[in-house]
Image (cartoon, rainbow, N blue to C red; front, side, top):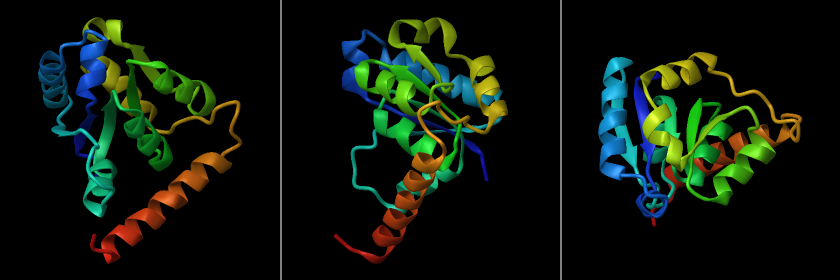
Length: 156
């Protein structure tokens, strides 16, 4: 069930882009509340686990300053807003998710609000990039399913 706003945070990148991570978190908590969603946060630094994947699967929308957050969202077909703190997230958008909503770090304070998140969520389906005929997203989704199955059977 899509009941959460998942915030995938890369605090070092946010600091480097002069974004106040605490203010961003507070703003996203308020936006989640306005949208009737629960706020959830991860830095995505732990190992891949079924618990992490479940957090994605319950998300109605993901806001990510980490490239991994955008990749997982894309692979799972979950609407996302990327915060571009460096070239990697911008390059991913250009090559895989051309119509995804991404904001330059300096625009976050002025543009990232409940209205934008509602618009992203309401689109729900991520359109294919002109560079991708659908095979890439399918392959990524299959890989995530395999990783989830492996993580639930292996103990590290």
